[in-house]
Length: 286
Image 1 (cartoon, one colour):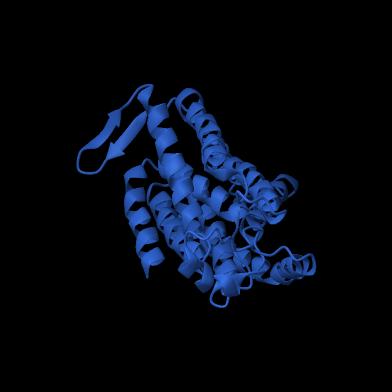
Image 2 (cartoon, rainbow, N blue to C red; image 1 turned 90 degrees about the horizontal axis):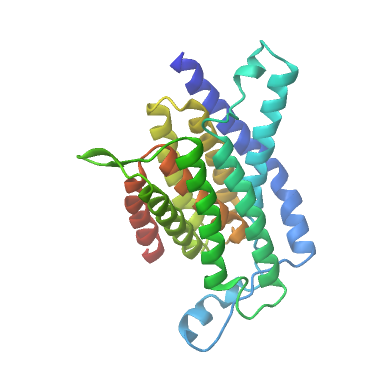
């Protein structure tokens, strides 16, 4: 049976990549036509970096739409195909399930929409650059609290795994740990975005790793979800490498950062995130 799940994951990952590649010209046409370009803020505090990044002025943002829209389409497409064509191979390709992927998908789309609004505010010329740190922290915390509530009260889950020690019961403290993990992962990805291929490359590595982790745990729907994300991210990187055609923007960085944290908690491997965070730091420096 595992052979089928491997084929399913690889098939949907490939289809996700192809689909994203095909509709990218539509998005880039819209972004360039309406001049949805990145504004390089120069407050005088970092004149050297502002000068180095000046050539990126006008490069479209909101490229994260490519990823989360593709994942949303694939999730509902195969879900309804399974409904209309039961007892067929199409039913087996569905990966939307309440136990494994409802929460990651819901978080991905909800935060992507918030990030899209943030991008739009930024593009309208807000000197603060969108919502600002305090507002973003508040938004991250609200979304994280909803996720924590789902885990603790709906899934009755309060176990937290510590490598070489095992899983421990945290009780209500699990909610605070959940909040910390989600907010930390969200800020990590958000701070990484802005250079050609940087956030996309780090996220591609991260979601690939969590796809393998989910598969090894028998969470095949979650592994497929990660695979669809990986396919879309690979297509995004195709156009995001130097010189970037567009950047991810908050609609991508915010949503995929928080979703990464949720998947880490779903697989009970959140302490792997510091290692992934180190990857972000190394890639940022290099």
